[in-house]
Amino acid sequence: MEKWLEIAQEHDKKDTIQKYRQEFYIGENIYYMDGNSLGLMSRRAEQSALDVLNDWKTLAIEGWTNGERPWFYMSEDIGESMASLINVDRETVLTTNSTTTNIHQTVRTLYQPTESRNKILVDELNFPSDIYAVQAVLDDYGYSDSMLKAKSRDSHTLKTEDIMDLMDESVALILLPAVLYRSGQILDMQKLTKAAHEKGIIIGFDLCHSIGAIPHHLEEWDMDFAVWCTYKHLNGGPGSVAGLYVHPRHHHLGVSLKGWFGNNKESQFDMNHEFDAAADISQYQIGTPHILSMAPLLGSLSLFNEAGMDEIRKKSLNLTDFMLEIFDAEFKDYDIEVVTPRNHDERGGHILIGHKHAAGINAALKAKGVIPDFRAPSYVRIAPVALYNTFEDVYHTMKILKEIMETKEYEDFDNKRGVVA
Image (cartoon, rainbow, N blue to C red):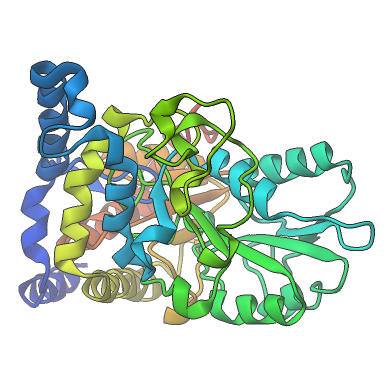
């Protein structure tokens, strides 16, 4: 394994965004490989949270409109900071709610069923919360049996053509993941969007495992809507407020879930009982914004806008390429399956490996300072994050993993997941 250390150190010398590592709080002797579940805290995120707390302390209610970061406009301001990550106009992107609430809001608003066109196309590999929300919408509209699921041929990935084959005149709306949360496969969002529109279908994507890890061009791709969380690759902190995008051609539609912060800001405090919808994406807000859960994003997003998504993606691919290179050379004897696609166009920001003792392997790694995560039934996700992980981190992770496999140390641990996996 020692030769890989020299290679890692050479890669690190050439790293163009390595300086951002010092912006993050990284524990001693910890190799954090779980940024696709919860990103690390940055000093900028910490400072922006403290700044907002200080505004509350010093300005009290005046913080809504005074200070450097007025709370009244914070959802829109943070949305503007995210616009460059997905390449859309600032008036089409917003920070608000949770991802699941945003699925309810966007799908309930954009789903316009008829007797002949009422199906919603999803996939069998998506995160459960997305499916729960879509099923709830269908139940409420009286079309409980109208969920259509694209099937996987291998239980890990989806074929673009299999999804497209399901697009017919019975489908009203499609919601798919941009990156599959288990395998890390990137779906061809541009091709799928074009195919859906040719059939007159509204299409949107869940970007939870893609935003902050890969570049997006939602406006160019003509995507109808997208939703995402901000606590994974965007490092907004646990429970940080989610984001959403809706193409301006849909802004004339009346939002389904109405609340006073979706009202036109000029008339919001007139307190009329008639809803006066904001003309842009702001109408998708519902209740009072969660200011303290948004505050860290003010700092964390500045790192992405400085580093640039192209550089972040380039390093991310190099990190996972390096990891796969070590896998191929050093792990032939350990019955470990690499599930994630090798093709750059299909690979997100993490690697999924499979083994019958995956939960035990995950626990053994954590005991030795490597932090990945387990996914049922028998998989470990390893996510080296471009902004704060190094190639040497990848080397040490793989070295420790090989030691665990050689000694079968995973047998010392229960092969079952914890309450939070």
